[in-house]
Image (cartoon, rainbow, N blue to C red; front, side, top):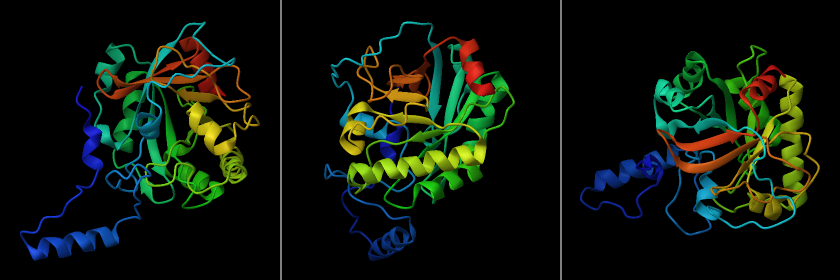
Length: 282
């Protein structure tokens, strides 16, 4: 399926045909949320355009991760998907027919962005019988962890004990807007994550799921092992989840491809549908 995400990048050149065009473009950029040039020196990404796995595709896709904490699937795997505004209105019945039984939708980013397609993408899977949840794309360089947890809960990240709503997810990975670790030291990043997780639990009563990639976790937290009480959602586009971050002996979820049916990103819950329902109930 053709990747629709490339249209979020600004063109590298400017039109010189009309002076007015340049003026209007400059005004729009001035009024837009701040953007930064990625470390790779590529085109500028607009704030709000990030999605689950954006950094994995750029930095870690297909990486070979050898180590003692390899976690190949040993139990029944339950298929799911994750989506963001890039997919627009999603064909949920088609995904159900293809075997998807859960879906996560991007709700927020930082304290400045709300997914304009959230209602269709969040209520849609619920209507087909899927379990559903939402995720927050973290930007630790903009505001604190507590403030971003509040923003997430207030704009789609809350949890309800209805048996179909999964706990919220903290998407913490490579920064698509600038320095990979958001300008944080390893200890500073750990503190930021801790603030987010503590606030989310205080607001919802649930432990947030942590979505990340092992290489990012090693580089930006120093392979911190103190969050293993939280479910782990590992990102790795390969035949196995590979080496896990320190502290976790297994993953709860695994984003295994960005080129799956209908929406691109597909995931596997590390257990049966019965176990997934148990996670939703809390």
